Structures are given as structure tokens and as C-alpha cells.
Image (cartoon, rainbow, N blue to C red; front, side):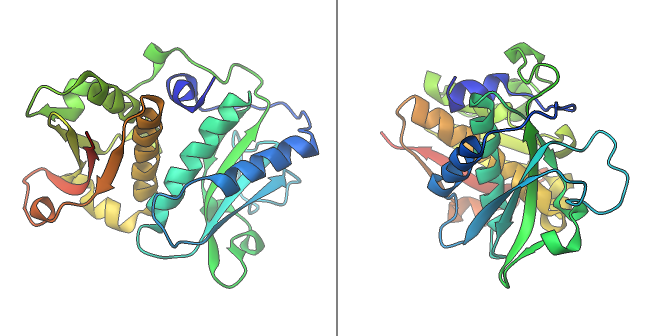
Length: 257
């Protein structure tokens, strides 16, 4: 299984076994993060792998939350750093899936105070619990509870087949509360990406919303790599200056010929 295949089969795991993961395997996971491309450049990031010792999170109810290991993602606080870390987190959960591990996203706000900061500049902005799943960590493609493409997209032109494949990968991206806040305006070789208007305020104040979009963009770029397609993610000024009644523009995926 590769990253693209994991998009269609990975599911959130709720219960883990306490199996130990060998040190060399943990180092392999850490090395993979170091090699990840960034979505937004010039933002310093780091990841720590912690074994669950009962002292990772604050002393609050954690029923159904604990995992045997945690990836804690740290980042400088810069423009779009939450989107950048969401992109990297989704890469990592898909990579862990290819290794046979179950994963689930957790709230970094639940970390103990001493775990929330790394040095003077990097702050914890994301947590992924992982380990050997008690049940299956995979699902069938059709079992994903997601809106259909026709509900998410406005097709202005008939898209090329591989554009639909990019959209299908984007459709399957996870989001907090399964909100699926993205909407797409689709042309032959470009996809304009919007957030639903009633979630715009939430997008601005609730940082996990930016992480949602980072994960969705990871799906688009992973699918593009699978099909050997060159995609540029750019914010087009002629669209960003327009006002839309139901949605707000985020970014565009432009396919290079």
C-alpha cells in the first residue's frame, strides 16, 4: 500500500493494543517526518514521538482517547502555519497506515503545559495517537461518510478524468466533526477551492479549520504525484478580490500541461 491507496482505506481508530513498537521503527517514522515537503515554506516545524505514560495529557477525562504512542507536531506561529501542519499531519497518518498502524487525531489543547512548547519559538499545534489497532485500521472506500462530488463541486467545464481523481481524493479528506467545509469550482484544468460562508468566522478563529484544509490539500498533491500530474497551489488575486454570497475563496489548484 502506498500513500495514495491509504487515502481510500485509512480510517480513524478508537481502540489500540499496548504492543511495543521497536525503536528502529519509531526512528523510521521520525525520519519520514524530517523528509516531508512543506506546504508553506520558511516555517520551522518539529515532531516528537512520546510513549503513553499517563503524563502526556492534562488530568481530564480521556475515555476513548488514549493511544500507546503520540506524534506531537510543533510549529512556529506564522501565517498559514496551521494549514502547513495539517498538510504534514495528514501525510504522517497516511504513512503510518502504510506501515500497518492505526491512527487518530487528538486535540493539542489537552496536552500538559510542559508538552505544549518546544523551545522558545515552537508551539504544539497537533497530536496524532498511533499504534497497533485492536480492530481493523482499514475500511472499504464506499464506507467513508462523505458528501458526493456532485454536492461539493460546481462543474463549469467538463474536467479531465484525472481532475476527477484529484477531486475524489480531496473528497475523502478527514475534517473535524466530519464538517467537510470545502467546496470546489471545477474547470478543465483548474480547481478553485472555497470554504462555506457560514464557517468563515470559524475558519478565522478556530485553527483546526485551517488544518482541515491542509489535510485536504495533502490528498490533492498525493493524488497528483500518483498520476504524474504537476499541480501548482496558488491564490489568484482576481478571485480573492471578489465577493461570493455563500462561500469564501481559499486557494486554487492549477494543473500544468
